[in-house]
Length: 385
Ligand SMILES: *Cc1c(COP(=O)(O)O)cnc(C)c1O
Image 1 (cartoon, rainbow, N blue to C red):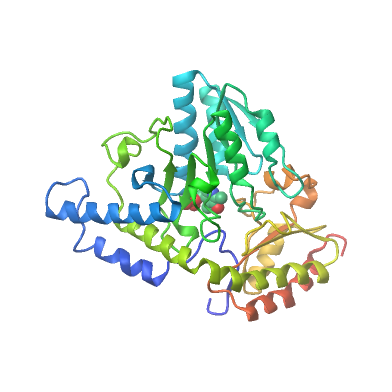
Image 2: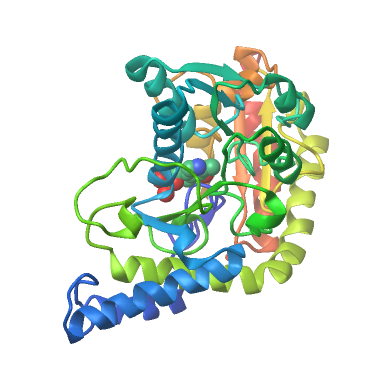
């Protein structure tokens, strides 16, 4: 594995050593339950509240507007279910407005709300880069709209949406606005005031924190029903004893990512652009997916005509490169990505997708090595050969 290059930072990132170090005491000597009255409990509670304050500073919100959850998916679930059910309960609202390029944690949650709760789901139009036009949001919001959700930066295609502009429209029209910022968190501004969001989802393992912990910003006064009930933890919105070490890990990781951000963007942008320019130049009938400019600095994604994306991933793996097809779809699941279909790619072409995502461990040499091998592998796998 030493010579295996990791090009899948959008799937997950390794835990930063400093994060791990900050977490360890809360498994051992400071193991208390934050809800306990005594000394041990107080220490654990102080750790959770310090973590909440750290995250709140980065999001420019009040600490009590942050809910710690079990992962990014849970944050999306709480945002969508919690707000949709509350909006229906309070004002009979039963219309959900989504971009067609949401992560499954949002889109499949909305579909369950349709199937089981009778909500109506409508999709916003996107252009061929996966961008949502704020004007379209203004046109499609109705009095009975319960929630609008638009992904901040897309995991499959890297496109960054104009969240601030969409948020302004939602505020004007009085509809709660959720944005999935799980991919965005490591690289983009998270100031919730500037983004004009009511809800913002984060997941620690996408920014060098541990898997299995997330956070959700819930703007003060946003009507919300808990989806996990029990004890009164997390302001009554997420029952369950807090996972203290992981919450400490999330906050530490976000602080580090935030303070490194400018430097990391400067380092990764030229590597990303080298990959994009060279792959498009060296591989015939290849296309960039997602926006050429408004895209994550660590994200390059493509489709290659006449190539089976899964076969390409396996060939790359054999050659020592861990990449992705972009979607969560695993080998043996031949359905094309809904995101690529929403962008207007034909199903056949969408099956030939490749996502290359960079991170702290990525070197220029690794990028050159990938560029060296990829054209040959694509050529070998082309159906017409
Ligand atoms: C990874 C990811 C999620 C899910 O986060 P988990 O912590 O893995 O549950 C949600 N949305 C986006 C955009 C993601 O990239």
